[in-house]
Length: 158
Image (cartoon, rainbow, N blue to C red; front, side, top):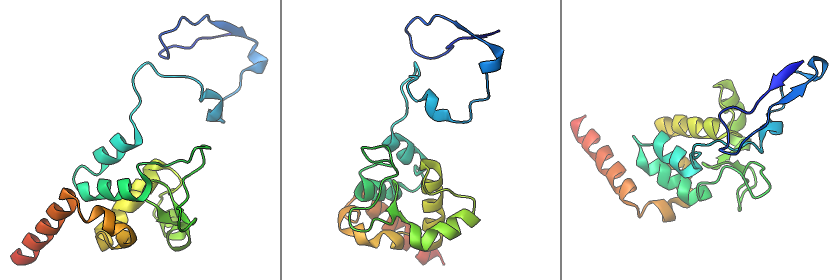
């Protein structure tokens, strides 16, 4: 027999349950854990994105404009673009153009971590150009003005 307890989750009292060893398996499907609520407040997607792009705040503003800081839709599926359904996730990375490249680099654009990491790769290679279709939204931000100013300063030093 194995004693299973819910340690570190929820402030509610949990009664340990005894499970026959034959029924105990490695949990490979983490979805069975979806209803467990941690005691600490989870980080929001916006907090994650702003933290991840703290060194390039314009990218957080792009995420706000592109997806309103959503990685998933109301059904829990990876967010699809409103105008182009091949745009995916918080940074609206286009599957058609980027899926093969992202996989080769080890990024899964269907996850929050992979989507933002691949967006950083694109930014480092192309700047904000991959998100020009939403520039009417983010180009008015302070973050974009600061990004433009830093680009100009770098150009003057060269």
